[in-house]
Amino acid sequence: MDMELRHLRCLVAIVDTGSFTDAAAELGVSQAAVSRTLLSLETILGVRLLHRTSRTVTTTTAGVQVLARARHLLSEAEALIREAATGHTQLTIGHAWSAMGRHTAEFQRRWADRYPDIELHLIRANTPTGGLAEGLCDLAVVRTTIDTRRYAHALVGHERRYCAMASDDPWARRRTIALADIRERTLVVDRRTGTTTADLWPEGARPSLEHTRDIDDWLAAIAAGQCVGVTPEGTVAQYRRDGITYRRVRDASPVLVHVIWRQNDPHPSTHAAVALLADLYRARP
Image 1 (cartoon, rainbow, N blue to C red):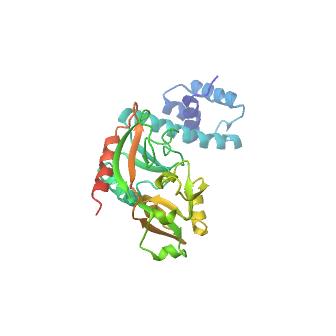
Image 2: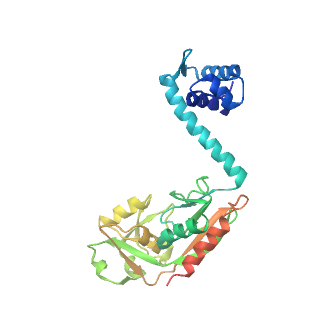
Image 3: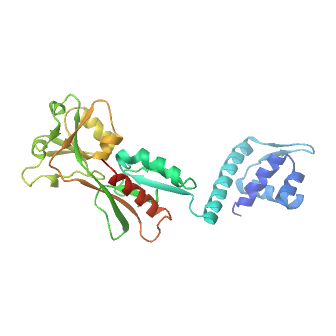
């Protein structure tokens, strides 16, 4: 026999009401049905959950643990039913590195003001799709190449490129950096989710590359002073760190910022999120 939600509801009702009789009244079934349901749950789990006397009902050690899990599972089930009945009540937006950059906080504030019934969550997933392909989010903000056959997308803005360096690097005294200068340095890049490749430079005049796996490793390598990085402006806003200085790359093409989503299963709030983020990028001074 498989465990069902009715088994968990029965256990919770018995503990919360303190008796089989009151649990039966709360659940709208007979006392005998309550006893049978609890016995079925104990049989399925292979442990005794309650100590029963003629006057009291108390949980066993195993019962305490099962009761906690039962409450959690019932809460999740109720949330699922609520969401299915009333529409999507949560929107999760993924990103690989820097969310919406300098617009992140303002996006969150405006979303909460405009759509108080739709809870917004931002998650970081170090994958090319910011967690969308892995099913971790409803939408994703990406700054890399998009698989347009698989995902719908919208261009919401552009970001300038910056050179990241150790704060004691001689370049930190400059206002801007040229691509031609960077090719003389070792450049640290994230091949999986980064926006920088050797293609920014002409063939035969490219910097040597060192590879890293995520933003934290990237920052640590740069802070050590042995290499520099090139990154979109969003990184500058989201990752201000002691020991790291950013200077604009004056002659590099901008990075395109897209929102992507599953073509055949868009979240109902997709276009609202795209419109809000595009407005924030357009309003930039």
